[in-house]
Image 1 (cartoon, helix red, strand yellow):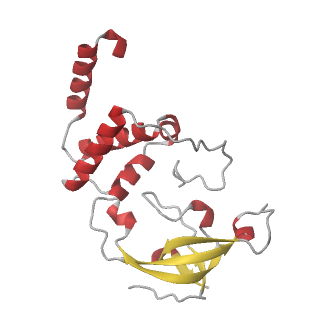
Image 2 (cartoon, each protein chain N blue to C red):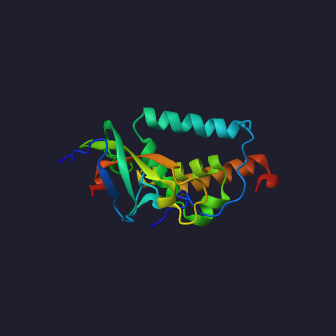
Image 3 (tube, chains in turn blue, orange):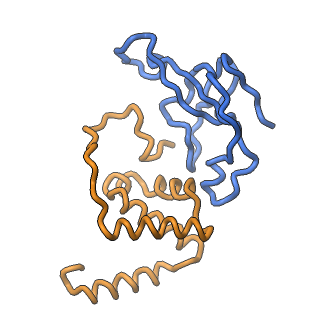
Length: 94
Length: 103
């Protein structure tokens, strides 16, 4: 079932390292951020990568992270953020 | 498991941002790639998976279109479109035609 997230929800990215074609970069796995908007539902690229139809579609969300949460030695302003698109099955509400 | 493409945050050298003109064989691979998608033999995400499966050494040694070529060859073999023997025979034939310089 599709998980519903809304703008403002605090979420954590699954800390998992499965084989295959994964669109969730390693540097963001296990990190906490905030959903900024829902982008719609799309065929799952992890399934498309196996040559199949990618169904059921997965909801994609734009999630905002604080740069200093991603990089331990981040030297820029504490207000710097990074927005990245992440599929629902990689997110859990905090 | 971290694929060779997933380098965010790792130490890396400078990025070459100069545009490069495409060679004829690169255009051929590009065209073949489009044609195979139109015929339903491959999907973009599938291409990505095959490229990411090349392994660290090949991924970091091959050029962009060489990766495409290696990944497409593997896909077409896996799907039974061509065999490795057919590819080897064709490469030998082309090398023979072009002479020893191409070997």
